[in-house]
Image 1 (cartoon, one colour):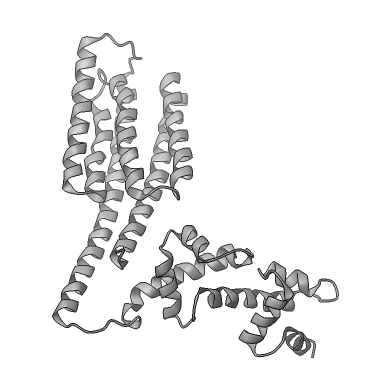
Image 2 (cartoon, rainbow, N blue to C red):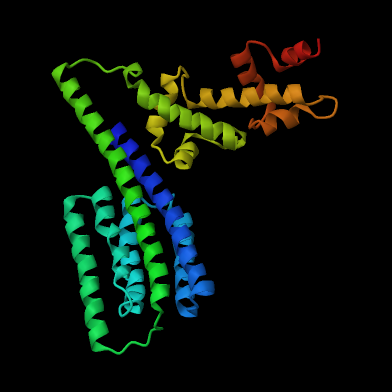
Length: 317
């Protein structure tokens, strides 16, 4: 069964993946520009910009389709292999390219069990060993960079990895806090067995409801005639049962009642902002998300205790 702890941790992991993609996109773009204008190396520049495109494009496609764990597993493997060319290219100039691989075991530690930390640590070590053997066995014709150029790239590389490691540690701390908090809650619950009301879960319910409200108002999702709790669940990446509990904790009987509240608020706002001699009532209630007038009339009467016509008449007084 999915718990509040699981949902909270999942949220933090998705936030981490999001911010990591932004950070790595900036880093790849910066190095791409360096190898385009400061240290001319067309192959390396294209390789870096290609990695930037692959990172951003794939993330935009899979971020709502796949689980966090699947995305991270895939990224760790692909990123390690992607770094292999960079590692070989700088093998004779600097070993700093190994630094790119340091966050890999740390990322496994943040997202997975200790078993995967060991597996990915061995995977990283294997890549380094293979790189060493290839460099010793084959004569690779990579551009030789000047010492001052290497110092530039090494400095930026170290700063970038400090930023990446700091980001991972920051979110690991947030995840650990959630785990500790719920461990304490479980111990307290086992010590004193009593029914847990919805109100006692207010901190989580409040936080989730604030997110729901923010998304609903900013994106005006209620204007979609076919909008439902499943679409909201996909939009904010939260299980629909928790959305429903959060909404009920705020006093709404169900999701439809909450959705209609937003639509009626929108109708009332549009009625005040528009001249009914220039726009029709049909335009207003359909713009607010109602599919037909009978549904609109019934919901308006139910929520406002007066008919739409009576409400319009009160505005004209």
